[in-house]
Image 1 (tube, helix red, strand yellow):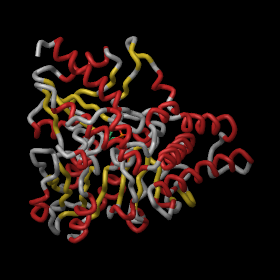
Image 2 (cartoon, protein in one colour):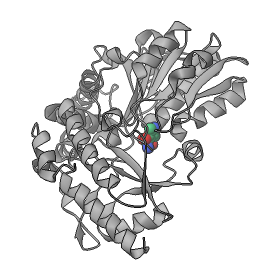
Image 3 (tube, protein in one colour):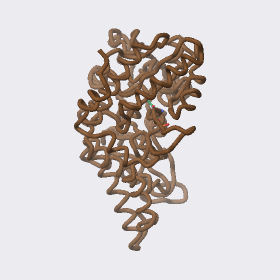
Amino acid sequence: MIMSPSTVRTRTSAFDAARLRDDFPILREQVNGKPLVYLDNAATTQKPRAVTDAIARYYAHDNANVHRGLHELASRATDAFEGARERVARFFGVADAAEMVWTRGTTEAINLVAYAWGLDRLRAGDEVLLSVLEHHSNLVPWQMLAQRTGARLRFIDIDEQGRLDLSALDEVLTKRTKLVCIGHVSNALGTVNPVAHIAERAHAVGALVLVDGAQSAPHLPVDLPALGCDLYAFSGHKMCGPTGMGGLWGRRDVLETFAPFHGGGDMIDTVELESSTYAQLPNRLEAGTPHIAGAVGLAAACDYLAGIGRDAILAHERALMTYALERMAEVPDLTVYGPADPAERSGVVSFTLGDVHPHDLATILDGEGIAIRAGHHCAQPLMKRLGVGSTARASFYLYNTAGDVDRLMDGLERARRLFGL
Ligand code: PMP
């Protein structure tokens, strides 16, 4: 039975997506003469007024460089910046804000681990365990590192529903495994991976665990100490925050082993002409003037999401996904990839329609005002594993409604007619 949109609304009455939409001015845009339906949230999310106002307020009232100044604005900017770190740490359940290192986003956070930790630690014969689900950001840095160190990359495969096949975990996890790098949620299929279980097994062989949290931080209630990993990378722009802002959380004892990476101002204690000593965490891993307004905006985004409640956001997305999967199952020629059970995925659904090229599908939907993504989703090895060149992908967030799913389905129907399916 297909749930009606009103059933979806009832199930998600913990919050009112239609009302939340008012917080996002961009959702009132018309696209190609139609009201925008934004279903490209796995690529980036829209920003609520609370975030853009916080950034504008910072620039209008508090802007100065941080840490060094002795004037009033410099101390206001420093308070805003370090206060933001505390709020973001708290959002992730982290008590020690010094464990929260700012980066430009997930990609930079993963590269930071590769260079500041991996370059000195990995040797020929060591192994790094990844999965075939990974985003290029969690593959390419390790390939580059493997080339430089002689370490070997190994991979966890998936089953026919795009879930990690953990049956061989004990074979691929050995004493040689130094690091396990795993995505918490697949950006291409939406699969939610059992990170805690993998972390437990990885720790049993002495490996560190880095989680790519780009797609979990926005959608799941993430409590980092409870998750069981050692390091966690995330991007602000995928969780209602600004672009160019994200972070790497790491257990203090693990971050303490990182070599300084970028050298420059702010990461030092003393500097001589020939040598330097370095600052404490987190500054030793944050050289140069940071993205102060970005931190302020990201903290506002975390406050905004916490105010709505991440359990409620997840319940809403799951209800939307259930409705979408039920409706999609009724469309002839439509192939849906990823877990069949909505409880095993976040709000991402990848699909193909007959032999229509996903780019053509995205273009037709764009003509209807519907924004989806089509392509390899920065997961070319996964596409190869699935035996497809590319897929179309719709991804939901807190402001999407059952009406958006209906518009998507109408758009797919139109595409079927246009292609004579
Ligand atoms: N990992 C995953 C799973 C992602 O979805 C993305 C963004 N698409 C990234 C990493 C990279 O994030 P960013 O581009 O913000 O660094």
